[in-house]
Length: 97
Image (cartoon, rainbow, N blue to C red; front, side):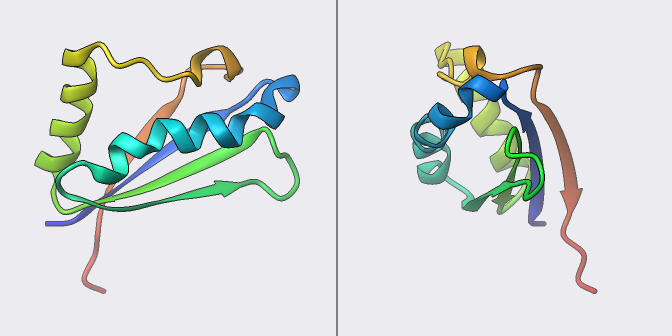
């Protein structure tokens, strides 16, 4: 069953200008990973330090495999120093409604 993972990011105000390129680079691997159906990047209209990554995956297994691969390979994102806090990941099942 398809799932959607929402990744909440909050950037330091002085880092927002660098965020777009860093996010684009960080997502290249995810977008090409088996089972990825696409990722949308949303920026809050009233606070440009708050971003959501809306990741669509064919299955929970694909999402988990991607996250495990990054951890196993020690792949670190360039986002860390730009963030004001730890990312939050929330997973949702896609409803047929």
